[in-house]
Image 1 (cartoon, rainbow, N blue to C red):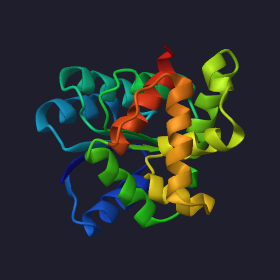
Image 2 (spheres, rainbow, N blue to C red):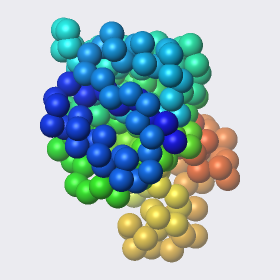
Image 3 (cartoon, rainbow, N blue to C red):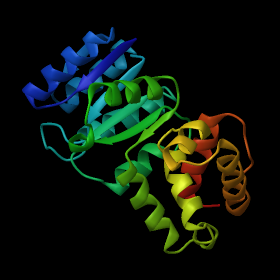
Image 4 (cartoon, helix red, strand yellow):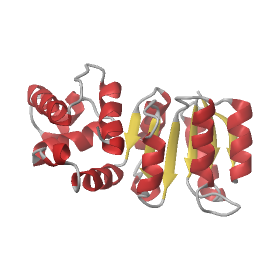
Length: 217
């Protein structure tokens, strides 16, 4: 699996390169600036891009803008964003096309190698890997002025957050210490309240929910 990595801090970039290589990823390019990232994404066509939001020269949103432009050229290009903060505008832009293969992790909340590598693989496979804090802020923002979302029970909201992280029903049941049948019931209720069609495909189901949270209906 070929990865383009963009991170301006040398030690972090070098550490990520070594980590991914240890898990049999091929590093197609490891860059530190926005222009370098734009060229790498255009020329190398990686299987997944792992990018910091803020890159030189301006340290604003170069990383994300390069990733968004690459996804416009190649819809569905898997992108995993790494950030120091929950930046709702960036998260919404990343989710806007609804084509899958997206992730948004907070750097200081990645606690082990397996967690990070699993996120990269999940995004590369077309799924989602969203940090719970990112999901919570998106949910809170939508709930303030969205009646269908406000109708969710606390348990359904909790299930929705875990779904948006990319977890399967079995994983959610294990996390909440309930049966998988109970989670299936909660999931059906969530889709009914949000007016979304139920799907047996977990990734498509999560993407539909995320698209709803971003755009509404």
